[in-house]
Length: 421
Image (cartoon, rainbow, N blue to C red; front, side, top):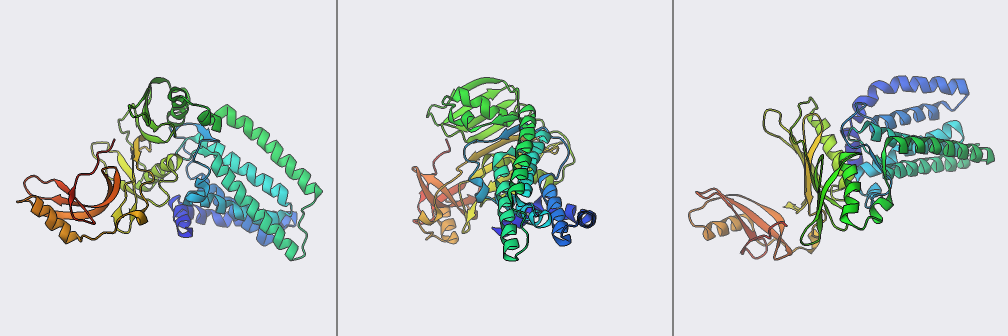
């Protein structure tokens, strides 16, 4: 998991941005420590930790076209704090701020309050910029938790070292004032600049027609007009048409299944593949945090004069392609044109029947069942057959018909997977 955290930090251009700024920030921190008579090492490390926070959370200062929404209570988001590399990074990133801030200034509660204010301000700023880094309360909570751990560790170390901690009544009063004043100002900024989604927006919306505007605002931004809301025949999904596009979500769990912008024209742009991958990852993290935690992302090439790219997630376990499918189409300017997801959870790999048929046996079985056809390649995947998850060999034939055949990987029988609803 720590390797995933490091990989994610690198993916947001952490190292290239920190290195050129580290020396001037360290010099400024050294000057501050000498001027205020603070512990030099702790102050410098605090300055570098603050630099790291700004670099990781604000890699782009260019306003985008994403929705200006702040989620402070949508279901399924808070558990993602501990389930994904970005979530854990949000905790780890604020531990040094809490630790070195408390060691440098010897006001642990004031330092903790300042860290909380910084976390909230950062999220609000990201929501206002709407450039793919959304405003989410789960990130605020994760950052605050990291600051609390760091501040607590600093107090423990100072007490162990028999040094002054600064944890006293004055620190409590000042910390309370800093936190209260900061939250008051930031709350005003939040409600005046962003569309706030609370838990009641989801929990108390019992009808599809009530929930559609909430999700529509989160997808397309404030002012979106809902034109039509229709419940599927099986009662398990809802499709809504708006003036900015269409989207489908599961019912009654409100999980986004797909969306498509009304304007599917891919705009020109000069974003590099890494930047496009970040936009796709950010979108997936907002909507499907559980599904992507152990999935492999790839950026597929597009086509056309102004091609869009497809950023997708697939999950592979033991060489077997699992059912998860997440596909996000992004144009060269970074705008998400469409997205679709299915089979978020899928079966437990340990509960599947073992693979007893080899690749060569699967190819021969496909060729015997289809005389005149030649097996080109084969791979293992999991699909539903008669509403039951089974491991199958998918064999591609390269003869005159050139089609695919599925064989049960345990018995070798040819099967027909269930069609997707």
